Each structure stands twice: as structure tokens, then as C-alpha cells.
Length: 151
Image (cartoon, rainbow, N blue to C red; front, top):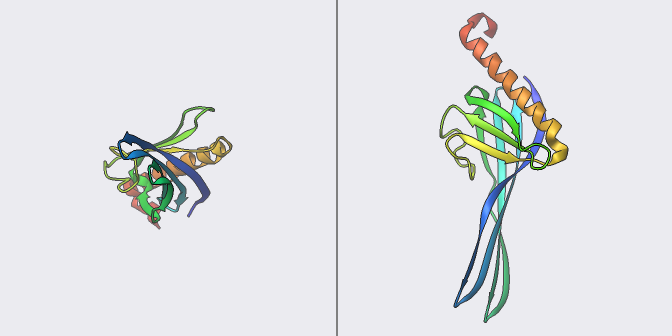
């Protein structure tokens, strides 16, 4: 069983601003999480915080709403591709799955693709995650074709 250290990530979620006769409202969302490769699965955990700032005749109001922790576990055999994108300036780990619903529940994941923003200093850890996913996927494929490897 292989284990790779946790990789922190962020997901960019668009905010929302509105101006009307009632006042001004600005909503920003921050989503942060952790990715792990544990054994033959890829685990994702995340939490989002929504900050609502409003200005009206009643005054200025600020609220922070924390969402519960979300998670999903995906068999590594369902990951078709794990690669680094974005270069030095905006590094990102992109995971592409063989099923459209593989990342169900993960905000902004679309059609089996999850784009996870990472810090520059975590690029080597992200490369290690990509290698671990590839290794696990290849091992699973070999075990599926050669039952003697299961012993």
C-alpha cells in the first residue's frame, strides 16, 4: 500500500456582485481542500467559506458562512490522466476520470475533470501525486489482466 503526503489545493469559484435600489452585495467564495493517494484510491476533502458583504441604508453588514466538509473517494483505476498544468505562474493539478460523475459533489468539477490549484511550493508534491496515481493505475490494470499478481 502506497501513501503520498497530503496535497493542499484550492478551487476557484466565481463570486457575485450586485447593485440595486436595496444596496450593494458582494459574495466571494473560497474553497480549500486536501488530496491524498491512499492505497488504490484518490481521496479528496474540501470545505468552502462564503463571505457576504453588503452595504445598504441600514449600514454595513458582513457574514461568513462555513460549509460542512465534503469528500469523495475515487478508485485510482478510474483516473485516466493526472498532470500538472499552468506552469510556474499558476500551477494546477488536473485530474481526468473515465466517468463523468467520478468527482460528484466537488464544486466546479465538470464532465469528469477536476482542476485543483496548488501553491508553487507544492509543485514537487503534485508531481509525486501524479506519479503515485499513474503507478497505482498501472498496477490495477496489471492485476486485472493477470490474476496471479493478486497473490
